[in-house]
Length: 201
Image (cartoon, rainbow, N blue to C red; front, side, top):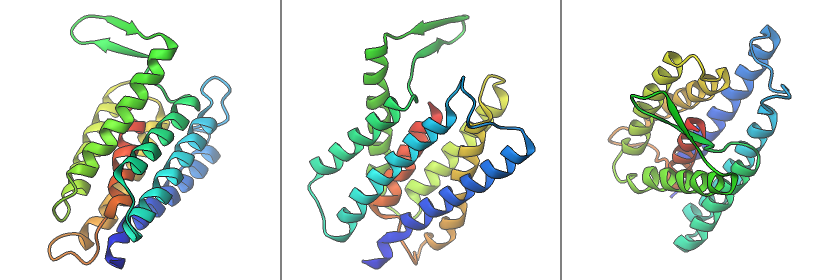
């Protein structure tokens, strides 16, 4: 059962990479997480707290097993923390026409929590084969990275985070191919879905 804790390594890899990139890019002056207009520091803190809430809950699930409704409460709680800290879906672009649909604030909270919980569970539920959830998440990371790079309005911090997430998965995947030496577990699969959902917002 100790083989189910590969997700912890993925989380640690992501956090260490993110901190390193933030320090380097801050020293270079290319990013400022304390910018009053964007409040990136608050959003990053909310993201980190959400990861901790999900990670602790899912670690207990991997170790001893807990009811699925407890995990759902943790997922909703983590999503609410992220939304309160400023990471919300506030509008959507309509394809093919230059128009946006803006949401009321209360509705933006609902749709954000629904999106994060939905994507988190989507990645968690496909975690049935060696390398499946991590492989699909890596493909999603590369796709998002291309979209971010091709979209001038994408914040630099989103490129930083998606690159760190992809790097943590690349470091894990060689140990997860069949015959797998370690497994990502609920900790990892929930983290991957949660991170994908948050970074895409």
